Length: 70
Image 1: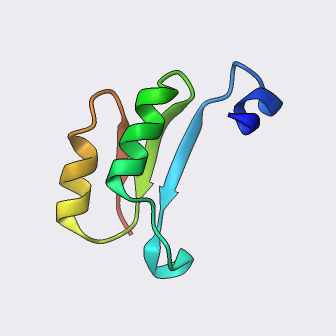
Image 2: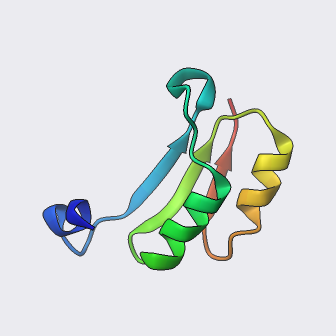
């Protein structure tokens, strides 16, 4: 919430799920929660996990834009 306050109401944020590089990815449950709590700000996610099950689960989050690919 502090980040959104700092960058303003017009912010549109895309999460970046890349566990091979970051070591810790963004769990589907967290992406869903962030989008549900801040639907005007958390608008999408880039899924570079290479895991089709994760991509499908992200696609099930209503209203979240998902860009799959490595």
